[in-house]
Image (cartoon, rainbow, N blue to C red; front, side):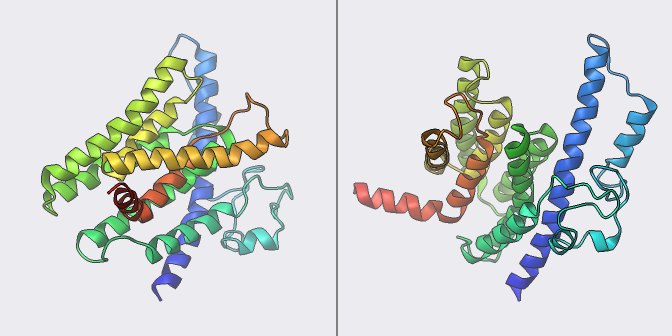
Amino acid sequence: MTVLVLVVLGLLFGSFVNALVWRVHEREQILEHAAKRAKDKAPELTAKEKQTLRGLSMTRGRSMCPNCYHPLAPKDLIPVVSWLALRGRCRYCHKKFDDTPVAELLTPLLFVVSYIWWPFALHGSGTFLFGLWLVFGVGFVALTLYDARWFILPDRIVFPLLALAVAQVAVLATYYHEGWAAVVGAAAGMLIISGLFYLLFMLSNGTWIGGGDVKLGAVLGILAGGPMHSVLLLFVASFAGLVFTIPQLVTGKAGRRAQVPFGPFLILALVIVQLFGSSMVGWYERLLA
């Protein structure tokens, strides 16, 4: 029964992710164009742009076609089913959607996999952490899609996750009496991952790694919760990136200077470390003993 509930929730939140990613990108495009027009002056929005921004609000705007902006009916919003029934096209303008059901499939998969392999007992702090993990999961799926499509990790998604990560540590340290151990572990993880990325960003002037990765690294470091898990996360992310990139280079599908988004590999690594990190670290320590 729990798995079924998580699947339904995952489908609903996956549909939300698709809307969130598109709306955030459209909003950023409008603000960027306004800033370019203004140059050195404070950007001023036109009346049409202000109206569009209101329509793009996640709380006030209605679901709409990303091509013709026609409001979508409830029958157009059934996760996966509506996309398949319409063959990925708008019912009204018949243009093809850029969005696919990937988020609507990936989110419930993440929810169920996390539940099956959750490393903590589901009571007390374990239940608290699992509930927050599902919220983080929604944000991480959104960041994965955004970075894969536009090579950007937007502050509008990263910063709320960072605030939530800090709040998680605060609750663990106070309400669940983990004290300074939770704070020190989170600070060490953030320093290792985000600190390393910041160093690479400064040394390369942003060509080796982006500023969004530095900010995401702070979130990942806090959630990793300690030095060993943070180092493991970096290793897993780098290995996953190599596994993806090397075949692209060998087959000629990507050149040596091709841009590869690192965010999805970092997020994949966090999922692996969150679910299996303690077992992996324990195995490594036994190997060295």
